[in-house]
Image 1 (cartoon, rainbow, N blue to C red):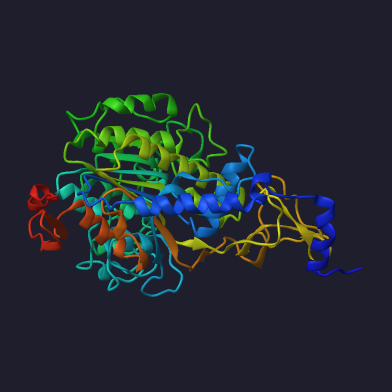
Image 2: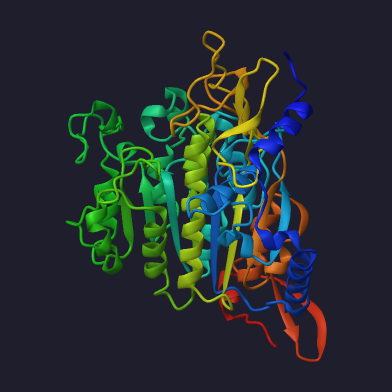
Length: 515
C-alpha cells in the first residue's frame, strides 16, 4: 500500500498528539511577544561611536539553514523543544544579507569570499588576497595584484590584531588576513609547484611571519611550519603529522626569535593544560594541532581548547592595547562537517561557535566594540519534511518516502551520503551518520545563496539590506576609522555626515566622533 505524504501525515497526527506549550494556544501570548519586540525596535538608538575594537566572527559554511538547525539543536541540548531557542547571534539588532558569488563562479569557495569580506575586493575561486586579475595557480599573475586586508589596515592604525580559528592558520579564511597567493592550497613550500617557486611566489605559512606583525595567532597548522620529517611533539609516531617544509625552515622557531623580549621562547603551548599561560605571553603563537583542530564533539577537554577558550585568551591579550584591536574568530570546522555530510558535527560546531560569540560580548563593551557574525558561504544543506514540534533536529521525519523507508529532516543535495544498501539506509542515530544526499560525490559542495550578516555596536546599522560581500570590509573600516578609508564625523548642530578620505594611517587615530 502506497500512501501520499499528506495522507501519511494526517494518519500520524492523532497518534502523535503533538502540540506546543499551552501558553502558545492563547493569541495574547503572540500579541504580547510582538508588542515587546516592536517596542524594543522603537526604543533602539543608533550607536554612532567610533569602533575602538572590531570582532568578526566568521562561521565557515554557516548558511541560514545551518543557523536555524543549530538553534534548534542548542535548545534540545538543554532539554527544550528547540525552535523557540534564542542563540547569542540571534540577539544582534542589525542584520542584512551578503551576495557570495565570486568573479568567475556562481558558487564560491572560502578564499574568494574571504578576500571579499576582508579585503573589500571580489576575486576568483581558490585565490587568496589578490584581485580578479590573478589566476588560480598561476604565480606570475599574482604579482602586482595583491590586496591588503582589514587586519593590516587595523595594524597600520596602531591597533593590536589577532586570529583565532578551529582550522589550520594557513587555511583560506585566516590566510586571507595576511597572505597573497595565487593558490589557497600553497600551505607550505612542499605544496607549491617548482615553477611557482622559480617565479618568486612564496607559500602561505612563510607569509604568516613576513607580511604583517600579528599579535595573536591561535589555531592549528604546525606541520606546515617545520622542516620535512620533524616529529610532531604531540604525535611523534604519526608520519602524517610530521613537518612538511622542503626548505628546511623552522618557522615556529623563527617566529619566536622575531619576538625576543616579548615572548618566552621556551613556552610551547601544545595542549589545553598550558593555555592558561597565554595571559602573560604576548604576542602569542599557539598552534594546537599539526593540521586542523578536532571537532568539538571529539576533542579532549583536558588537551584541546574550545573555541570559547581561545577566543577569551585572544581578547584578554588584545585588549591591553589602548588603541583597540581587530580580531577574526573563525568557526572553520562547521564547513568541514558539512563537506563530510556529517550534519551532527557541523551543527555542534555551530553551537560551540555561538558560545564563543557570547564570550566575546561578555568581555567587551558594546559602546566601543563592533561585533559581527556572518558566514562566507552556505552548503547544499536542506531542512525538510514535516517534523513535529520538538522533534530531534538530527532525527527522522514522521513521514516515509514512497519506498516506505524513513528519512532524516536534514539532508544534502550532494555528497558522500548517497548510500542505499539492500534497499536500506544506514543508522540515522549515530553522531557519525552521513546524511543522505541526492547526488554521489566524495565531498559535498558549497551552496550559492546569500548569507546573513548580524551586527551590534558602533555603526552596526551600516550592515543592512542586501549587499555585495565585499561591502563588509569597507563598512568595518569605516566604523573603526582605520587607514586609507572613509571616516565619519558628526557636528553637534547638524545631522549631516561629513566624509573624509584619509590619506595617512595616523589621521585615523586622531579622528573621533563629535556628539
